[in-house]
Length: 269
Image (cartoon, rainbow, N blue to C red):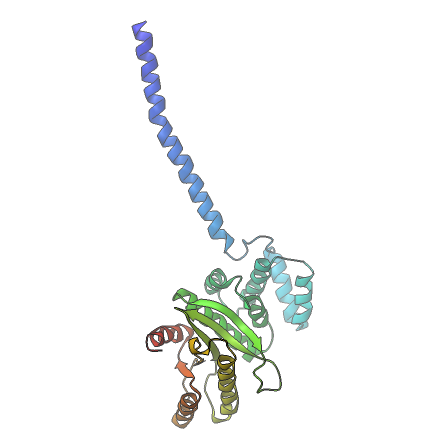
C-alpha cells in the first residue's frame, strides 16, 4: 500500500512538472502565430482578398500593351475589392512595372495603407505620364519618411479650390505633428529652370490660400519642397525671395532629407 502511494506521488510530480512546459510552449506558439498573422496583414499579397500574382502580372501586361490605365482600373473596380486589396493591387502592379522595388513598396504600404488619398496616388503611379509618375512617387516617399519620423499623414493629394487657378488644385501632402499642420507642395524636378517660376509662384499662392482658408491659420505652416536645388544661383535667389514674401518655407533634398529638415524646422516655428 505504501509502495502504491509512493508510485502515485511520483507520477503526479512528473505530470505537474510537464504541464508548465507544455502550457508555455502552447502559448508561445499561439503568440508567435498571432504576431505572424498581424505582420502578414500589412504585407503585399497577404491582405484580405488580395489578387494572386498571376492576376497582377496579367493586369500589368494589359496596361503595358493597351496603354489604357482607365480600362484596367475599371476592371479592378468591378471586382468590388476592399480598400486594402485595391491599394495592394496598385502597389504590386507598380512593382511589376519596375517603378518601385519590392522592399520599398512593402514599407510604403505598411506605413500608408488606408491613408486618405493613398489609393488615388498609387493609382496615378501606375499610369504612363513619366513626369506624373515621378511626382506621385515623390509624394509617397515624402509621406513614408514622415511616418518613419513621427509625423501623421493627414492626406495625400487633397483637392481644393484656391480661388486663384481656373481649376481645382491640390495639396500634395498634408502632415501634422505636435499640434502643427504642414500643407506641402512637392516638386521632383531634376533642375529648376527660370521658366518653372510661373508655376512655382502660383503653387506658393495656393499654399497661402489654403492656410488662410483654414479656421486655425496660425497652426498651419506652408511648405514647398524640391528634390534638387536649381543649378542657376539666380533662380535660387528668386525662389528664396518669393518664399519669404509669401511666408512659405522652402526645403531642398531627398524625401528623407526633407522630413529631417522639417523636423528641425518645427522647433523654430
